[in-house]
Length: 378
Ligand SMILES: Nc1ncnc2c1ncn2[C@@H]1O[C@H](COP(=O)(O)OP(=O)(O)OP(=O)(O)O)[C@@H](O)[C@H]1O
Ligand SMILES: [Mg+2]
Image 1 (cartoon, rainbow, N blue to C red):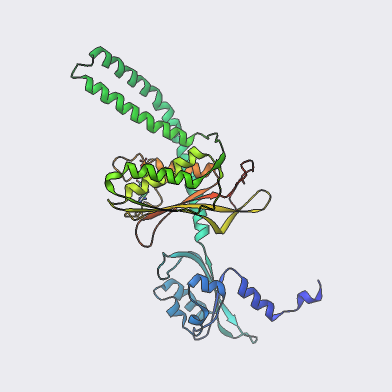
Image 2 (cartoon, rainbow, N blue to C red):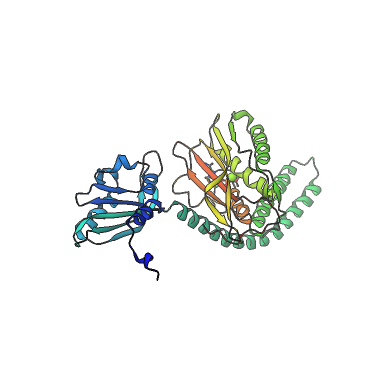
């Protein structure tokens, strides 16, 4: 080993702490903050100046779990961590899942002089876990449902044929003809649902081309405005027009985005507002097979409706889950399937202000011949 590598360079330590992407905080034995790195500033949304000298309990007010862990580490002089249960509360934002590790800080003589806290934001990790869980459940349910759908389609054809024959026998002036019409109409409706369901499970051959997301969104808004004309909805488009057409199946992507916009339109009150925005996400990316980072294009559909019940959040992507009287509950699962075939994913959240927001992440790939990565490493 070269000798310079063994020399402890204090400036190097400072640079490591300054550049590491984990929030690092330290307190003295009285619990006053004595170190607060830039990642801690970003994580806590507070500047170093606001924090140095402050007692940790005022920084984590109303967060007993964090305070308990710090107190324990201070009192028992041992490292403690929690990767599962902690949420960080900050003003004006939703609670953020974090992992926290607290270690005692010792001076040269081995006496404790305080503690070091390392916080890691787990939001991205949790999002990925949720997306994978949803995709897993979807593929299992999809296969099951498709098998069932196949079995139902044949007898349904029989019912439809029999109802048509009966209608012909009765003649159009018969007062009973209305009933055969109802049977045929309802059978067609069930058939439509089954088709959707089979689409969901059938691995479909996509026709990938260069897709102009802005154009798709403008067209969808035009149609939805018309469909909900009497409800005077306000659609606000905030499109990054510098995004060029990207690799995607236009008809599938239209279906996906239409489902999101339709859901938003159905969720809001008369006069409600739907914000649709596109951007290139720079905060995280996908690795290409050649190990080049590929950014994501994100399309967010946000509404000012009632939002999603916390208890429903896990279920909304499950086929047939619907809280609506007339809903089939296949909209979002179809969206998820389409996102999947594009190596993308969908994230649902409740907005801090009001309503729900759905964000579709799709890899920003222009060249349609380019192979997509097979997995989503962050
Ligand atoms: N923008 C939204 N605001 C609040 N809840 C929503 C929103 N979008 C979806 N949901 C919830 O997710 C459920 C599932 O949505 P999904 O699109 O899969 O089915 P659906 O809209 O009920 O029926 P379908 O799309 O088949 O007509 C909805 O019933 C609703 O409870
Ligand atoms: Mg829907």
